Image (cartoon, rainbow, N blue to C red; front, side, top):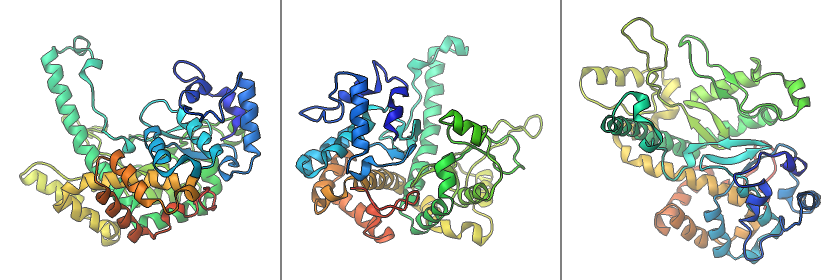
Length: 397
């Protein structure tokens, strides 16, 4: 990130970003933020920017994922703090101090990256935050509505997270992902990852807009509005997303699968409703209508479906695997981020990492070992430290 812009960041709850970050520095870990004033802290940041550690030499608006503080502290404690570069430790804690809420997973410059796929627990609607009277129902009716909503959320989120995790360990997906990002690196660095606009016309091609607003007056002048022109890079990005049933990429190696829409708000005629159900989801219910919907979703040409055959087999016969693949997503994401920043400190420390991730993910050490070995077999043992497709530079640890 560009530390000169830190003073312009939105304030965190209860104070400035510096205040929030400083709370995370305990037991002598205040290397970056132990300052008497914001000016002094910014000067220290600027000095670190010109330092020797690769993690502190990133260009403006670099994309940085954030490690959960509980996970990162456990890793540092287990591996040994003396093995880590102290400036890199401070950098990670500074990033963590800027986070607001569980859905934030990183930053692209001053833009906050949000993704609920990495949440330990899926989002659930809370009846206490809704007003039954305002909705025209009583409290018992509200509880029934909330129960129905949460059941439907669970129906969507479990296979959605599972599919994202399956993709994260799919060598074909990863290879195509890396090729796309390398081919259009400059456009992604400039515009971010476009996000899908809500459908209003089922017959029209998917429309994408900028993932985040321009971050300066100069950028606004040069890039225009939120809309994106139909250039080759956007066409190829759309094709990639459609091929892999994604709405968009939240960031590198963080796919956001298409989600069902019930309904989509476009009624073909009176007395009807239109629904969007991607074929990566299981179809509930019995009877002829359910069978007809299932047949329609699993249809299509061989080229449209062949690369998803293994996932369709899971959907049809092994739905109990959704949770495991959802765990793979969180494991590979945080494992990769750790090794990208701290590869040297983590070498020959796999046993300690297995134990830390086992506690973080509420699984056994052996389960995590098998998960990592499964990813190693799929992507190659060097996957955590492999070159970042947006920078083509190796892990920065």
